[in-house]
Length: 480
Image 1 (spheres, rainbow, N blue to C red):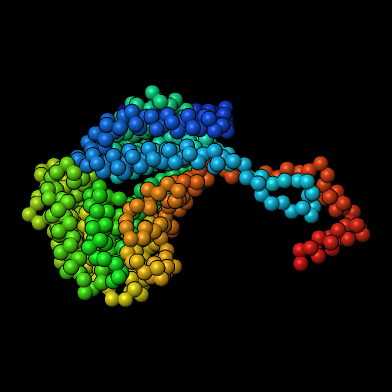
Image 2: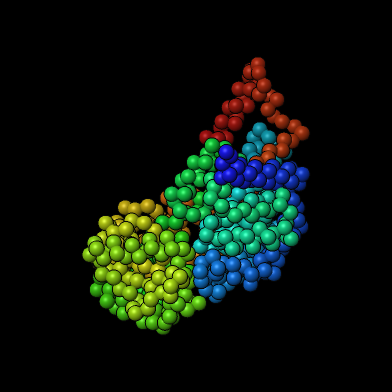
């Protein structure tokens, strides 16, 4: 008897391969779209999102169980639309052929140029936490660079995936842009395809598997991973302002953000004050965790993982502070009350893995060197958040803590700056996109040398004699 699962996987693989072949054929038919065509593609992408934004917001909320509409509009719809506008404004400049210096000793009249050209077909693997932003922002730069794209959505984004698959043919032919739903094995097969570039956003463990698959076809990869991004509040910085900004970031999307503050260093003599300010902030801004304004944890498995991490912390001696004490999630909504974890230790799960939820370990410190020692003994984070108005201390932290990106005196805001590249370093990722760097990532900056009508190299052809010796000596003297 035939295995229906095996047949389904074969059909999926065939569908993916066929789409890749069709997109590659479309690329070869028009390998370098002009400025007008690229802007048209960006306008179409913008129209698709703008015209269907309410349906998209609803689909994302259905995938979460409850996703704050305001958070989706701010972090997904508005941010992506702003990115479209930024790319269209700067695209003509990005596409310009670059002049480069030439060695005139041997090549008088010749010239060097760098020509940005499309790579071809780009694959994008999208996580569930910001599915529109992390699909459409890469597509902005993929299309700006003149490529075609295949996008694989998360298994936790079923409603959104099906909506996009239904809508997209009204805006783009499949040979330009195709979306795929995760049905169990699509991600593995997708990462094995010989794309011209592959962008993955997700966990470090899955990123390793994606990179290993891509290596078999020598597909270049950009990995946007996560990690444990720290914040440190310096003694000079107003504590109330720091707590307000950190709590806003920590509870946005219920903490399910790869660049979120994972833990915070607080001067040891101000821990109690930190706790009091945090309680007051939550009481004011999150009076009811069952409100539509407070986002659910994505699924039951993640909800249980967070509760187990809190239990583990308590068993290892931590003090748990429920900032929404007395509030309980309505059945089925998976609302996690925000927690502070005091007196955390390295043997706790919360300090070993990325938290990805509304839980904040608070680490007391005396000296800034202790902060450096703690952070630098661990994997390089995706983001770093120093809070200080002291310029010399800002420089000290920037010089001594390496991270993917930095936001000084706030959190989360740097990925929203379209003219800044976004990316990790080491275990938190490799490569960049956003802004000009996004255009470069999905382009081949192709070096081209144009020879002049006359070339002095003909005097250096063998058999070598006195003329060749004189020419070499003359060149050598100019170089010494």
